[in-house]
Image (cartoon, rainbow, N blue to C red; front, side):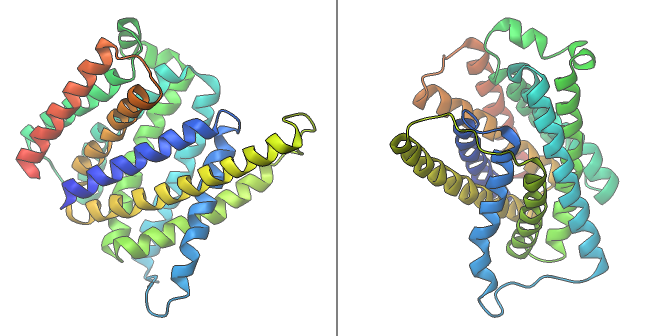
Length: 300
């Protein structure tokens, strides 16, 4: 069950990555992330009106795990936004794929979880494939390794983000086991929506007078509203399947399979946006699929 839930979470994540990619062409990265999380929270408010449907634990153990996960997630997002602003995306963002390897250590340290050597080999293939699949050329692939990680500010920030996400996933699991995937999804999403509202108020800017003519602006606004609605829905779908997977699977393996979102996003890019089918992409896809099959056969 955890494997299927992880794949569904990866698919939803790929969807929100595609929508985000579309929105950031006209909006800033941080505003898009913030508004997407706020919309996700608004969409969940009706569930609170149904008596007895949602139960938020009040134990100190739950609150500690929940708020560590929420705060770490916020810090990771801010790191990622800063990385996007200061680095070449094709070089920096693939380093998010390192989070499964970091999670091997964080899950063992916090929860005492360990993976088999076969699963570890599968994870290594998934990570290697994820680092490769976004490469535009063999030259990009070479840049993904070596000393560049110590020189490029964006790569450093994304690597730090991967490390933080490894702990976020562990505390997500702790909070989920102390509640339920549905309850913690609503709790954490609403909390992030409130925090992102505060961030959005801090960074808000006055609207610029230039831009499309009024009729074009009206069409653009409707298109943007639909995209934000899709973004909010995809956030919630990803979150609930992610937490369902964590409730029954090992954290490191769940995070590894979720990295398939990189592969799915790449496939969408090649089929819908006519992005080039390069050798690194095909090699990376092969490695990720092979690694996922090993993990499934070993622990699925």
